Length: 479
Image 1: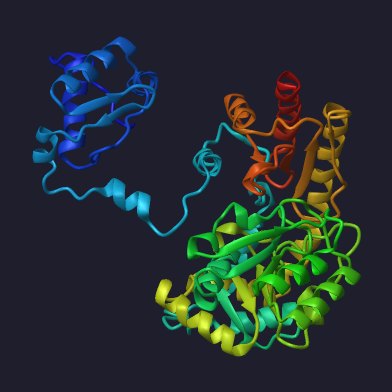
Image 2: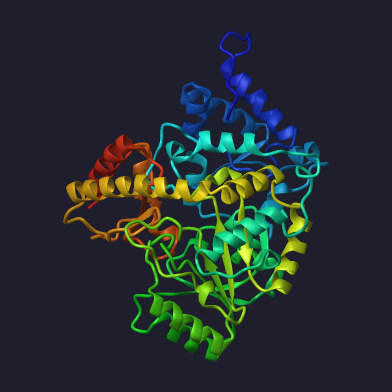
């Protein structure tokens, strides 16, 4: 609530509240069945005593504008007076409830809400700290670009030609052969998944994925009406064998994986595992979506080549992005795949947003072609290694005997496994009270109550030290 009663007004506080709430209802901002915040929350928001809020609400209930349901709260009433007032108002609540796109879990909505709060210590955020963004270099690169009216207009459906050539050259260094014609620019990796969901799959298609998985936290396939089945690397059977067994009963439409520095587990598939997966999916005719946004962030040892580098049959759709290495705000990613697929997805993208930002495309093209990306990655890896080592030392100091973890070989994350299944909304809310923002395991795997995704890429060293110590104290209390 961004409104507060005026203490200097001649009207009483409770009458100001009554008048304001009536306006919210008559203007249609609070449609029928809208649930009001709790009395305590309203009092805090208005900066007044709870008794004043209760008096105002009681008056509105008496007028028939509000209704109270025991154990459920206070709602905008559906009585005759309100129906007359709202005769021209559609039932927006019904639209909201029945929209096609799946809502986020409440925890994810809370994370998204609190990420803009500068008082929060973001221990789970999967992006680079502002201190790791090459602001000066980006400014210099922008100044080196000769813009013209055409370069800042709409690009062709697949994206800027120069950028696609730069990405093609970049992928070649990883062993991935993708001509500019078989590449398209997207507004980040998530849009790539959304385009695949609505452009290539039928409603009800079976999508297999490695579990726990990033796609459980963003819903690109669920919202398009797909069935999702998670496969675990911890199972007695390998994931390729699990795919074969499932595919024998119901034809799978594709398999989604983050094989290098997985989100959220940070696990990396070996070369042998990649070849086994590719061989099995080729036999079973199950296409693979390879989400490869973290592979440039290796530390001491370079990871195995991408799945796409072994793909001679057009089986793999390869997704990349500069969001994790350069800047998330640029919103530039790409898909590499068979040309008919790319042309189909490019057509759909044009229907959605008519192309990604021309300015961002020009910048990333120059950044890649001028060799700035390689130099930046060398520096960035060193910074992330220092942050990783600090986080590992803090975990050893505060979580020894209370949790288990692996040493990351790249990427952003530590998949922290607690000794007790206490990762639940209560832990999340307790952390919020201490101004800690965490990513609990159940947003990636519904029944996972033992894991937290910790990130060392965003919080400062001071925030990591304070945050990890405070988090350990909260968990010890709950245990």
